[in-house]
Length: 108
Image 1 (cartoon, rainbow, N blue to C red):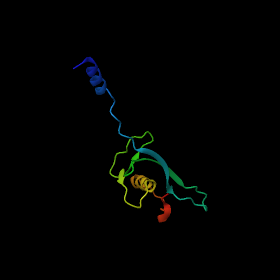
Image 2: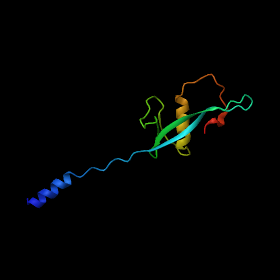
Image 3: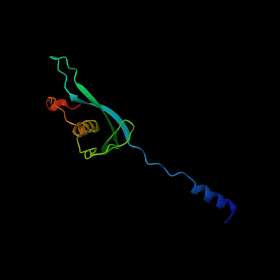
Image 4: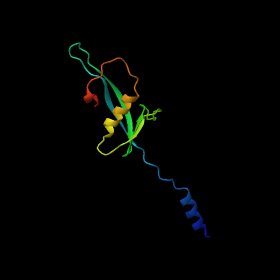
């Protein structure tokens, strides 16, 4: 083997391997308490951070670290959107308090 062939072989072995693309990171808000005009209560929302790789929605914290727990990932089914599923996952994992739940249209 000539010195040029050795140099090319060495150079080829040092090439960086292609990286796996990261899932896109998104943020949204989920309504936890509906506003009440009679009492002046503006309601309450919570931030929701999630990744979406085209198939799976995974809840993450503000720094991008996946959350641990039973329901922190979900594979989308036809007709579902990542935004709605992320909000529902976040609300399902939230500790329940003694507030009056609004009707079925409460998820953003």
